[in-house]
Length: 199
Image 1: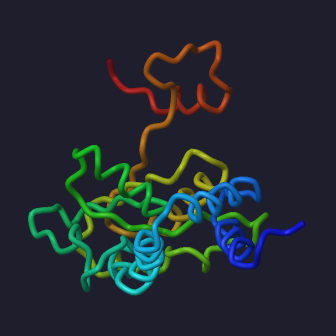
Image 2: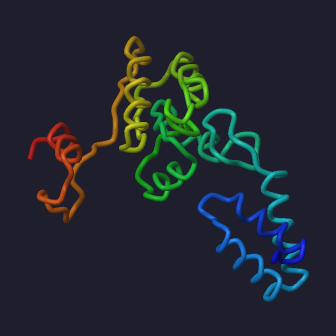
């Protein structure tokens, strides 16, 4: 037995979101019907419309913005010669919320993943190369995730930038604070060994 059509339509809409299965979508749809006023439902729907209508990606770095360029790229006090490369906008926000990095960013919108059909041309590597080619870039920091896809992407970008004048660095990978060596996987220990510094 199916729910009435408006509930089924809302369930289908919720199920299009990542990580939302049928049961969670049912719970959300029934909650919306039972607990939200009509005004709240209208505002909820309007928020989705505003998201698509008022937001776009920054043409320079790929961050989300309501303006012609994002606040980070428009900030003259930041170090525009230092670019941190991240896979997603969420990664950018994580780094930015630390409050320590004063350079600018470049969002790739993914990572190279040939098994899922994501190639070099499917992510924003070409615009990064264009930024470096324009000059005045002293350092590119590769902050891709410590996954096979992230490693593949970082290595590919490093290879492309080998002939440029800018320094190419990457985030250190290894043992977490409070971590026990005996519980770490081999790759984590290897990265910790490779990234060792003078003590």
